[in-house]
Length: 387
Image (tube, rainbow, N blue to C red; front, side, top):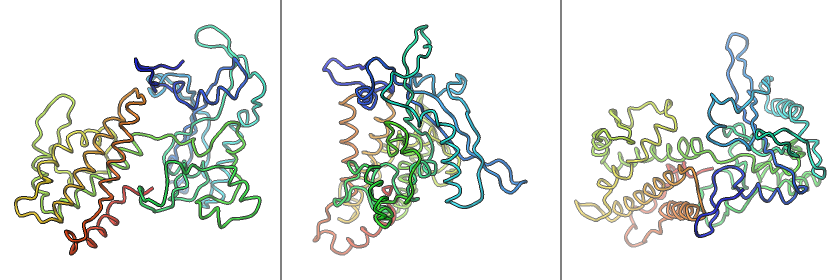
C-alpha cells in the first residue's frame, strides 16, 4: 500500500512505501508477497586472554515489520542467527571466510527461483500468503559494508566516486555513478584488474552477486546516526573549532555554547565544546548540538563587513555560515519520520546550498593576497566532504 498527500505526492515512511518494493513487485509472479530480508552484523571484541579474539554477530529481521517495532530491542524483532569467527589477521582469508560463512547461512535465499510463486507462509493476521524472501539490506558500519561489497578501503560501496576526491567536484557525478556488477563481471572475464582497482573493487567474484534481484551496491542504506550525525556533522563541528581559533572568536562562541538556558527539547551543555570527550558522543548528543548551532554561530560569524573585518574574513565567514545553516536544515529535515516529494526536494536544495558555499567563486581582486592560503585551508580541513 502506498500513501499520498492531498496533492498526489507519494509519502515515504515504511519500507513498503519505497520505490524499490514496487519495482521488484513488477518482476515477480502476480500475487506473491515480498519478504525483504534485512541482515545486520558488527565485529565484536571477545577477549584479550586467548589471542585477541573477535567475532561477527549476524542478525536477521524482515522489512514487513514496522519501523517502530523492528528497532526496539524489547520487541525481539531481530534474531541472532550466527556468530561468525574471526580468522587470522589476513585480509584475503578474512573476507573469504566471512563470505563463505554468510553464504552457508543465507544459502536458501541464494538458490531462490524467482519464476515460481514462493512459499506459503502463515501471516500475523491469520491468513496464508505466497511469500518470496529477498536479500535486500545489510545494516552495518563502513567496515562491514566494505567487506560485503568487496571494495577497497576508502572507496564508496554505493557509487564509483574517486577515492579521496572532494564531493561537489564538477568533473565527477557521485549521485548517478552507481556501481554495476555487470560491468565488474566483464572486467573480470577480460582480466582488466587494473581497471577494477581504479574503480576501487577487489578483483574477485563477490558471492553476494548470486542472490536474485539483489543489488550489492544498494545493500548499504544511509544511516542518520553514523553517516550524518557521527560522520558529516561531527567532522563539521571539529572543523569549525579550528576555524574559530583561526578567526580569534573561539571564546565568544564558548560563552554562547555554555550559556544556553534550560528548555524542553533543547540539550544544555555545561562544558566547552573542546573539553567534551568526543569518543563518547552518540546520535542524541550530536543532535542536541546541531539544533542551536546556527543560532550560536550567526552573531559571531556576521556576514557584514564591520568591526575592522577584511574582505577575506567577510567572504570566509559568509561561506562558513552558509554551510552551517544548510547542514543544520538538512539534519533537521532528515530526522522526520515521513517524507514526501516536497521534503525530498527540500533536502536536495539544502544539500546543493551546502556544496555551493564550499565552492565559493573567489574574486581575484578582492582575495588576491589570501586566495591560495584559504583554498589550502579548505582543501585540508574540510575532510568531512570526503567519501
